[in-house]
Length: 321
Image (tube, rainbow, N blue to C red):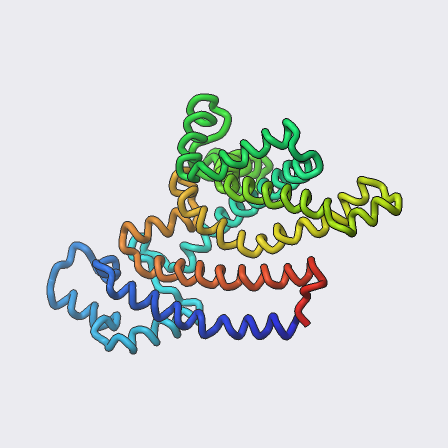
């Protein structure tokens, strides 16, 4: 398993290099110019603009610009945001804790609900409760996240006034206090539920179907014939085999949470990297846009690696030697 992990990590390097070439090329082909945020907007002197372009290397050959960007990127120098006038690393560092908190909350809610509903529906199939859970799942699969977010804000924020409709914390609380963290939890619940809606519905159905399928296999019949308690059969024999798909999805959840947060954070005005990504696209903030795209690409590759490793850990029959 260790050798396999090392090989996969080394294999990520050429993939990231190819992605960096694509990202850099697309950034150069896009309209606009990140240089527009680097100069004094009140100084329109052509000589000044030409001097600044020369200083920043905009007249260098494309391959020279690319290797300079990659070299700086590897060293942690992502450039300066043309909109916020600050280092990209500092800007992302301010936003990413909010996205991590949102993603962790979403995964926690997703897996708790999926396990509860999936186990119940799998142990009691074709009952009223199973049909009710199935109907909720199909509803969750059918409704796009942006539509669910709008309805959630309308009902739970505007009509019922239970959850706030935007932001990540109330500004009246001091950082680190109990009221501060309670406010953060209060603000994150609604976007976290919306973000995990699709995954909750999918995982519930996966778990329910796997439990039903595994309950009909020979090893379960053998366990029942030996007089094993029904609770032990479900909790040990059936559930262990049924959670394999869910555990492998955990690696992909790293990617889906980040990508889903782009829409959810924008609708809820939640200050995370998803909202920052949309802002960088609309304002042609190329240093931020290129950095976030590379980060999302790395998380995709890393998530696939985690999924493969977890698959071998959960199911010894397919463990990679």
